[in-house]
Length: 513
Image 1 (tube, rainbow, N blue to C red):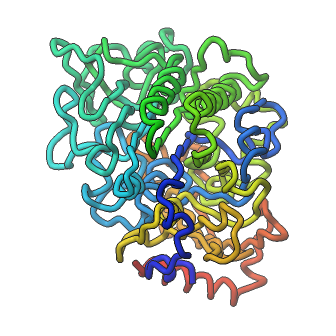
Image 2 (cartoon, rainbow, N blue to C red; image 1 turned 90 degrees about the vertical axis):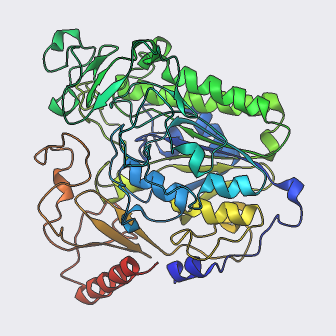
Image 3 (cartoon, rainbow, N blue to C red; image 1 turned 30 degrees about the vertical axis):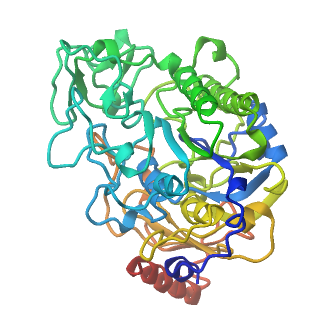
């Protein structure tokens, strides 16, 4: 079965191991909350995404690409480690706040450390959201901030700690906050107020976008955030400039490292809330800020592709564009995402959205291009973000050590269109509320929720909020995705033997390592 193959390291023979000079650069662009139906090549008509569409036309577009979870931190943990986040027993892997401890143990094999071992220069630019610090001491944003990305495999890192709707609203380069005035120290808390600055709850008249109670904390750049923050005024970002900043940084990194293999992990901020596009993208769509920041995201992808062209390395670069989970319309800020959505289908007609274990929460765009190596076309086979670890091991002629990459499957032959190799036949999809669903072949099984509460939402979550109300599955659900991809007809009562078999299989996977 899938997991036992991964655990034993029985991967296909390395395709490029005999010729290290053929190893490509790897650029991994992970959007934040981009839905399966949010881009043109997946059916969107209300949003123009010419750069992403061009990438798909020149490479391989997967119709069954998956994030391993329907929220950001657990998906990114699985991407980095090749292990489902719910397996982690000692570290927090729910949606992390900006001062949460590092969720990956330093020394644990990760995607960047694997590529670093193969001689790659590795860089993180953009969103991190996997925690900082050792957990024993509060993160001091005024000094050296470690452990962090550099301690788990990156040579350099230019990033924000969590999400753009959370404090601290600053960039960190390697171990230090950029632009920090030492006479204006930063304080951060998610438990108590540490600032005399107004909050969104107190001064809604100061806001660019009105927010719900969870997002009504300290106001930065006219946007109220989750949490409280004081100080660091010179270091605070401007939301409208975020895409430009990471695009410039990415281009600079590509140019500086074009002479030897590099790995660039670019975590974009779009289309996550708060959606505040640069002025040149305002009105780019008829969908309001959410549509406009997707147009901004497409521009960011275009800037990276243009930088690869200028550096002369596009033909020897594997570019992957994907998302950490499914879409959300309303997600804390009243930006008219629901009112202006019209007939646009962010999840492409699939059921659910971010936070949920339905297909709309976990099936995401997944596009790969490597001219002359990745075959051009549309692929209906399953592929998951957690597979990137084993795939890059094969790409660079390495074997995963025993006990690592438990849930990662080598998909290099799938990407390149070569015969042989393992094909993913099953996948565990993680939602909130401790929900784990099993995709096995054409079947999708979601067991009844074990508890009537919301877990894993971070600070200020409201269990009655409509965004994740459907996360509570009242009874076992079984769907045949071959005939019912939108998960509309629960056939659990019709196929009790299948339910029993899938329940047993899910329990076995949960016990395995």
